[in-house]
Image (tube, rainbow, N blue to C red; front, side, top):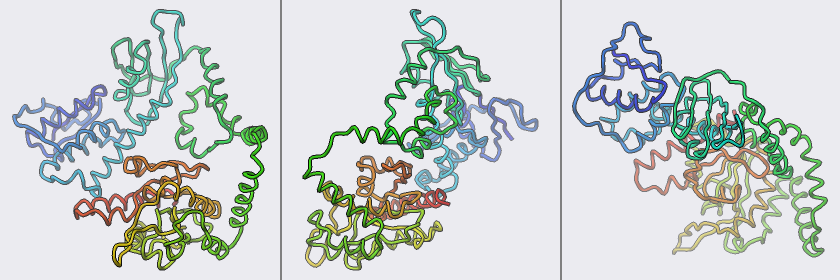
Length: 473
């Protein structure tokens, strides 16, 4: 049994070099124990220098980006997991793309957690000025408590952003100093910092940019968890700003200019109609939807397709638009994509009858090709006109979580479908603060011609819905 101790500074490079040496020497993962800054922890392990074998080590192109993140995770088995994956990819060439493999899934999850933690550090570190503000090179210090060992890989961001000053960032695991060059020292307990007059200026700025009309406490706490508040000067203002937001929003509304009479009458009629439909039964809503002439899509469609499901559903799925079979049957998700959707729901343990299922656009948009009707994507105007109906459904159901499936749904709920695949798996927020989970539409999976990639994407879709199920319990 070999013992490898990875230093707390330069962890990635040390792990990479050790893993390469062990792999060249053909030392299997089960014969290696790893530690982090704890040399000699295993009394029965071989602490001899690593072998210096010859030979090249090749890895898939997506292995190193994964390792560069996962190596900083706080999981004590991270080094062993990464070496096991490195060992396996030498013979399992498609392993990195197998999202269903437990090891690959775990390391990808770890990498995402580290990436989120790095983002939080860049967003929530607050420097305090030390010494004389008039000095030639100003000095600053900050305290931060990361979830993972991210101080070292995140330090270059601060060196680039604040390269004209000297600063230190103290964390329980590592201390980062910058005076033109980066230096690292062991972590410390939180040091006492002097009062900083600029913090009051920052609080004044924060108070003035706070918009009470756009208050979304759930979304705010999701993006800025309370664990970071104690080190952020503006956080002391948040309870008061939340408590006074309704009164300030009313004052802003009262100070707004009035709408022209003709426009006001039209807007008022639309608001009254929406209010009546929110309180009406499903039959009344479907009758009103059948008479919708808000855009030209009704002219060629067989019928509109309303959403279906209980009005107290904690979970709402929003697809893109009805397909051919949905248009004929008047129900959402009953065609091939719907069957794939139902199968995946069953696999992850979501009861469709307890969720509300609908589409962003209610009429089928198509182009005829002989006897077939080929799907066409709705344009921006059609999506905007149909948001009125989706808004009524959202207010009737008031779900705890909305799942946007596909670009049309994402554009309808957030205003943009840009970077759908990069946003996939992320939790965003609707305009009312309702959490929004982003994923692909089941029809996307059916259009993939390559069977291997299609299976990989189906596994990812299943993982997405499994996360959704965990989020709503």
